[in-house]
Length: 194
Image 1: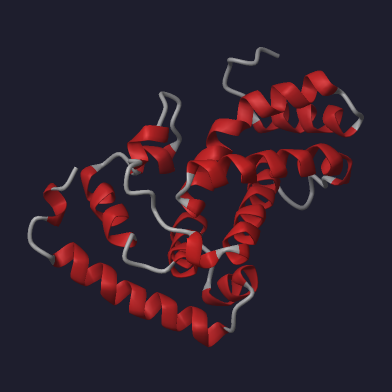
Image 2: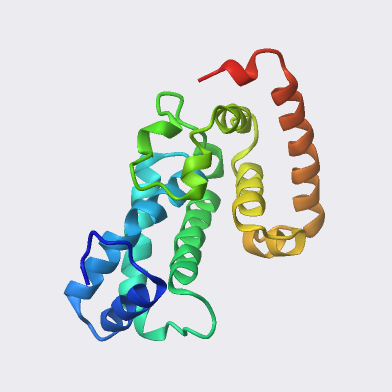
């Protein structure tokens, strides 16, 4: 199995199974095959390269130690790994919610690479860039709620569980955030920002 080839879910499952048996080479291949996409997710959630790197490192340590507990009948490998990264990101957001914010000096284009998936590709479109600019106006956990809802399709109840917040709070964040985003996107010239 070549590291640079497009890895199928079966390839990832094989790498994870071998990782669960302590195979360091399989773990390295798993990291090589998935780290770029998982880092992109962490960066979108945390909006900080340093925190995203920390989250990714912590997540891969957990993946190494938990690989033998993975159950193929519960979730696909990438889904399982994404949940680990997302949960670590949420832990970091909860630990320092006031310190989080989009880095003004860093563009979302800075972390894009040639092998972008559909979500990464969407982030390069000008309307999505405008949306990302508008999302700077939202509080970190509110921005997280939107990301989980949009990118992962979580319902209100799932968001409340994932963010460990009351359902009413999550609904209020989304309602007020949506109004903020609509106003920002409707402002003149926002779509021209690049």
